[in-house]
View 1 (cartoon, rainbow, N blue to C red):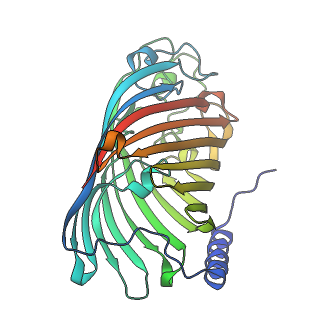
View 2: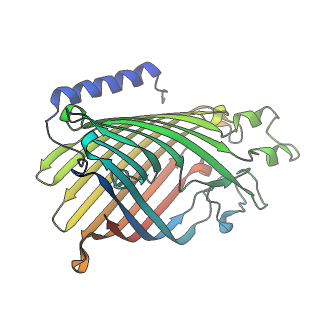
View 3: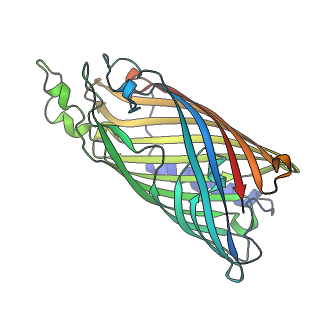
Length: 347
């Protein structure tokens, strides 16, 4: 039987990991240092991406109607142009930087989150960051009521925002710790209303409260980067997430284990990530009469080629990803693919 992690166990895990990392840390630099001179820096990138998804929550027109709640959504393939970028201004004498955009170190881990914040490097090598996250680029719409059967579902917007606090290269080591808080609101929440309106519905009016998706999430991360050999690093990452939703059926604990490999050559760079995530939900789902349990697997990789055709400052990136969500409720299962080719310019 799967047991829910307690708050004590979570706190103990992260304290133990932090102490172990501190005692075993090598005094080497794990993060790119701030520019030596004051001024602007950053990058811009345009991606041509092919995305394939069979999630029930994909709001593409091809997936707006489902005839069964006992399976994944329809397979939807799209080609999109996706812009990425970051602009930063460094105050070299103050060892401080202001930034706005998508941080490269999060992109290589498969996370595309717009941030606006400040970074400050301490004399002991610790790099502190504080940022707000006003935009989640790839999760902006969902269904008002995902459980509509035999009719077209209607879209509604997701409004989300949050903040992030992190400490990297703690005391000149390769240790990193992070806390992230995000609030998410469904603009027009109608989950379960269609089923409730049907003759002989298994739902009661009070069940709709358990289906509400508005939430506040807390995510704690700890990482340590090992130097395998010159130019090659391996970084294990542990994450604990607590999702506090208005509806108990959508509240959950989650543990994520990620292993990130990076190679930095003179012309070629490579980043490969393996991700395993387990989720335990708090209460019985009223629609499916069981408590949801998810097991997610993912692989994400980038191959980069610097200065193509002698163009200094430019870079060609090739992104590839596959993400599989397994659940004891078939409705929540999905397999998503991504491949993208991009050209970036760093200044």
